[in-house]
Image (cartoon, rainbow, N blue to C red; front, side, top):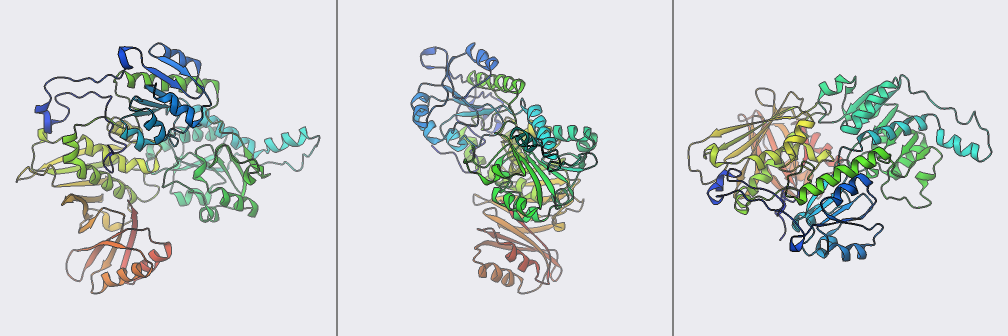
Length: 587
């Protein structure tokens, strides 16, 4: 059975504990505590397949609780054959765990453990559909990755790899390999999570001026280690060195491309120990050849391993290593223990903070809350996209308006989905009911909730949801409330999540596809002008709504579109004289 749209990373079909108080809406159905334990058939120990090399400390821990099969370098066919006899699977980044693996397990596979952070190689939707929990090990390799980033930074600046190859070839070329100093140079750290912040600390110790861009980095946390929080534009245009510490998501894929390279300081140097796909490799090659980028140091690539004649790897100005970020003896042991503990805990029915898909929820609750869960995530995504770059998100307030009493409305799912919408699009963390509050706290985002009790029938669980972000600047000034907060509000209308308020303006647009918001002078013909521009560019309009304060005054037009308009199309809309500001928001 497939998982409802929007819920695939929130709900799994087993492995979790429920209690009588867990879901007040249906609490009468629970009359005792129920714990679901996953074990091998016949009551024996579960079997864990370790498909890639794992530190011995992790193997020893696994053997205390399970039968362990260490089989490395399996082909897809061999993995699919073995998996039907296994309750858990542990992999690193080299093994693809696709739908075929889950299908071959015939329902026996209960846990997949990824020894590391990224889970690009695991099909999360298929895992959830087949009731398999996925856990990762996100903390143990932080220092190792940061140290490797600094190693590449210094080696690149002083041409260590090139000079080493030269002298081993019998040459003595001191003048060719004159480097650059790090002291006093500006390093832009893109992504201020665990690894990014550790790189920043070490770079400060080398005498560098460190700036960072991360929408979720609290300004006080950055200031505490002497780092300046700036917008993406400031970061890439002023840096002498750029160090990437971003997850690979739809928002970050090819973030460094021809356009962004063109806005960088000529002679910039780039380090990437994050994910290969964050850089458009062909664009980087052009930037190196033109001199916009003086040097690059890369530990990760879009395709790993790269092809033998990869022009980027062979480029004289590139220092390359084969994905060694986590490759220290200490990190390998730490990751092994962390993932072993997570897998064993999951097999014993324990809740794991590192779960990347989520616990079972009674189907009755899912059916009732499904459109509101989608609405909550979409409102979070909209709100955070309205924040100006460089403004750290630290205070979010969620209001639920309902005719039901608080005891009859469990909002934990909705809260988790708001957090998912706020954080997940630009984070490597996958948000679920288990880890949402933990992730928000780690990023310094304080989530507060308010319930407004309305008069009327409690037939529908919620009348509307409002999301407010305080202490930030907005890309769209009209999204600000009277108190200066970014404010978006939505309702479910005939089962469809809809945006009904932006700032002080009432609108009515279905939250499907993407949304263009325009503040305009309220005058005849505006809908036709904008609609004609979009139509001429073959952009399909799904909804269009105008909210105004009073006739002839300011109004906000909300336009739902199925495709992302080109920059030229958006510019044409912005050039309409009556339009005072506009913003494109991707859902």
